[in-house]
Length: 401
Image (cartoon, rainbow, N blue to C red; front, side, top):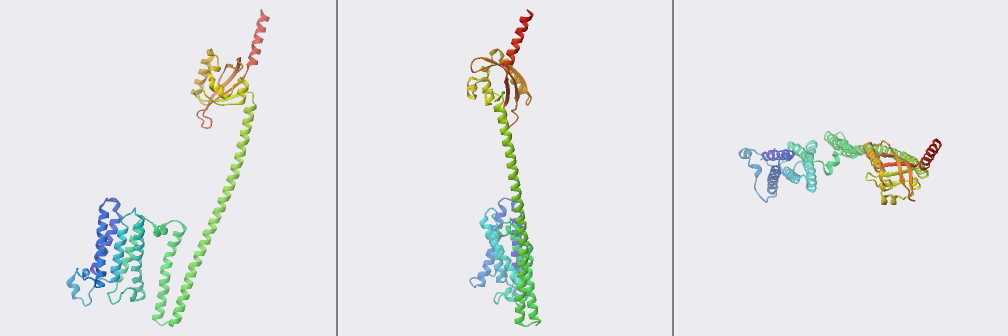
């Protein structure tokens, strides 16, 4: 591994470390990452221009220059190594801004490209195919360099918050879970099959034609197995999904039936209440704390003859004799002080015809009940009873006199 390659790997790892802990600082990490990614990019780009013969910087020969000149084969940076650092620096640069979704997506795709720059030479070393790790007559990319590029790419992909393709892998949904389970088989399976083919050719176990035929057959069986496994998993998921949907439909149907049943019960209860209130000879009113009539039952109008609008226009206190207003005030005060407790009362009430009628009443404070939020005034006409009592008393006085 070239000395400049080691330096650039160290700078890349330093950039990753700064990126991981940049939330603990302000502007320093961004500036540092820009400086690191820019330096790596310029050094890698200079090596590529040297390879094409456009320049002659030879930065990969600066460190340990004397030792490198004494070697028979100069240890220079390989072209694919320079390409890897070019991609790595771009990936670091584009992932600096955490809140810029487009830049982070571009950085993610560049990191994937860097992953394959390290994966191809690794496969080449495993299969002993120099074309995968050597470019023309230049020095080949070293095996440790290929491993380092793989780790660098995985670090760039995992150090960031999950977005794009990485977010799909990291999700707890079925697709992400299945992809994580299948990833080792998808990578290791073809590599092992290819390795067996190379061994059979190297040791002349089978002819070239038979080896290719067996390779294709094995690959077909491998991917057919992956397809079957995927089919089984997807079918199981689909069955579970349909079962859940059926349970949800059954639950909705049961809920609709229950709601319909409760609605009918409420309608019947409401109808019964209206019949009791409307057909009853007693009056039932809902009154606000400032003595404004909110609701008046038909029975109330039968007793005193006024409509709701007329009562509010006249005012409830004007329906009571002036000398009995204190009785009404005390009943209201007691009701306000004792929520939910019926407070008895009674006395004279002015009829619409102008005469006075006797009533018995109870006043209950339901202001604490959100469904009512009023004082309930229930009363009945007892004029005939009071008149009968007066006649009896008059008769008794005449009799005793």
